[in-house]
Length: 288
Image 1 (cartoon, helix red, strand yellow):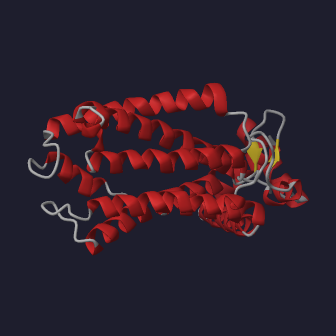
Image 2 (cartoon, helix red, strand yellow; image 1 turned 30 degrees about the vertical axis):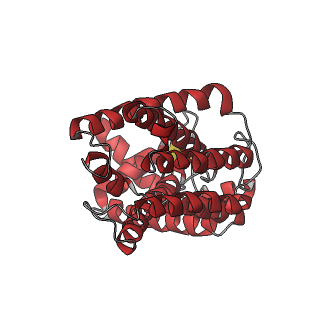
């Protein structure tokens, strides 16, 4: 309570106090983040999360135009393509439920290994559809593409959720929100790199909205990169999803805050006799 009142007092007599405090807190957070990201237990899984997303290059732009092409593709309408993506979004919920009910107790490394393997295998469905092998098997285009989208979305969600859970286990006490935001930036950068990489591959293979001759090769390269990511699985810790993955001393070192009886987080503060006297005088003047 005394520390809280002193904060209010400083904010009154020193207008620039809160700006100074914000800068100081930012410096503490940056030092904590720098110290934490250098740990092998942290930078290795962070690197895996980025590479697993970046190496799974996106070919959706080329596939979209192929879907709607009346000559080279199945000639789907744009409305039907939208329905395909909407059904896929609903299938993502199924992936969340599967993870919650059956997969949340598996170790990180084993779960991500099999999820990545299934992710690469599911990518082959795109190649089967592009080569029209589904028609050879007697499966209509509209049914096969919906099935392929649902399977891909479910597996993609099962693969992505453990990486989010892993990110939460890498956050040190005291800067949890800041460090989790950093890891989410790495996640977003991986997704953005995936789109950039896919665009580069489509450009190099001369895949355009009218020329799909090499689209099958772009899909094959994408699937090959998905399987290649399995070689990076050693970067993922082999601990359970409930384990603490960073040393306890790092947690303590990065937490410069203390907790009061109500569980509220307060910044450390050194109180001098003169400051306490000023506070008491202020309180007495308010009472009178």
